[in-house]
Image 1 (tube, rainbow, N blue to C red):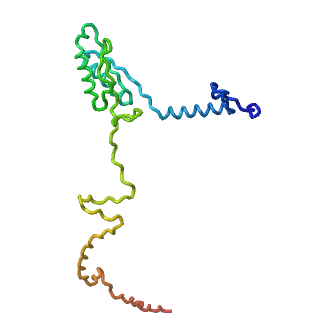
Image 2: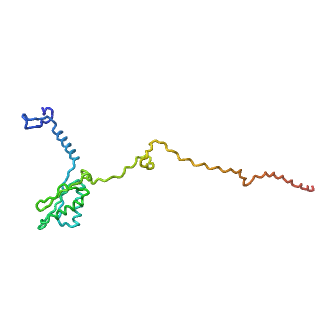
Image 3: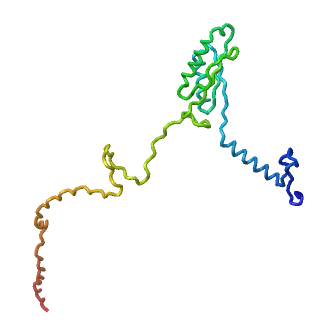
Length: 219
């Protein structure tokens, strides 16, 4: 039947009597299963346990360097395993290792919390700390900080601050116009100004002067 349909015969439960089989497109089934697995892995966060080794007499510079690494691991959402290694006669003074671990916890107390108290494992003292809830987001997104205040929407009318207990003004209430300023009293207008050069009467044309008669010569 599977060959006639061009599909595969897949054994689902071999221990049943009789065994349970299913006719299906096995290639398509594997493809859809891999897609679901990838989607589930995409939304899950992996927590890694980081190990930090210390000594009962770790120098201040080395201590600050290791604390810097611990804070980075915690900000990524991981846990830290603090290990104090005792050598030689140092094992007879476990209180020094406890003091070192307490110093580390105090330095990262703002973002870390103790998940496992200090305990001896042979010549090592072990303590586990993890990110503090509410400070480090899941997935290692860093410490939670308050963001800037949202900007008012465009076109919003910003009015003066309202005193406590005062009723808020209506959104569509008309705004009173400011009182008009008093109009100035007009000054009396003077008469027409005299012309700079008054017009003069037209001058009559000059009369032509007749020429005297010339004497006639003798013929």
